[in-house]
Amino acid sequence: MYDIYIDRMLIPVNPDKITYSMKNRNETVSLINAAEVNLLKSEGLKEISFKIVLPAFRYPFINTLQGFNKPSHYLDKLQRLKKDRKVFQFIVTRRYPNKKGYFNTNIKVTLEEFTYSDDVEEFMDIPVEIKLKEYYDPRSTVLTVLDDKISGFVTSPGQ
Image 1 (cartoon, rainbow, N blue to C red):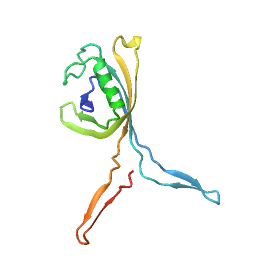
Image 2: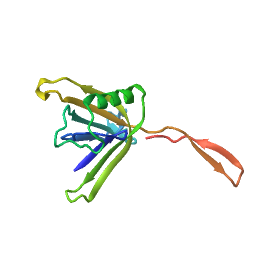
Image 3: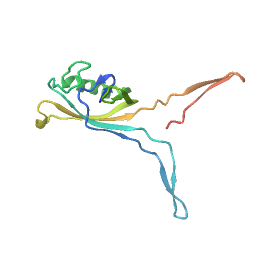
Image 4: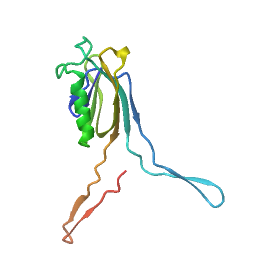
């Protein structure tokens, strides 16, 4: 069992699968002697993608911890996240069938893309594809050196 939250909004029906993509930013260069060398760099930002269905009716299998909402409620929230370019928490809580905790995912992300459609096969439910990308805060860190009475700042090299 698991629950999925997008900016504190509980997803009513869990997706069949969530894909987490961790890519490297390595670079391959050719040397003068025609040999190739792989220059290792830090890990790139994680990408998360999944497909959900927003139910039009109160089915017995939906998660109603936050009450029942129509698909427009979720679509409006996704649209606001996209329009406002908001950074938010993506949380997945996992539990064993005996309700004991397994492990959780809690990551700052941005909504990169979402697509929904009116599909006759889904009746009035709305299928939605969501793509998220990890957010890294590039703000500087302030340092104060007390011995030499020097203060300054250091910019983190990022990922």
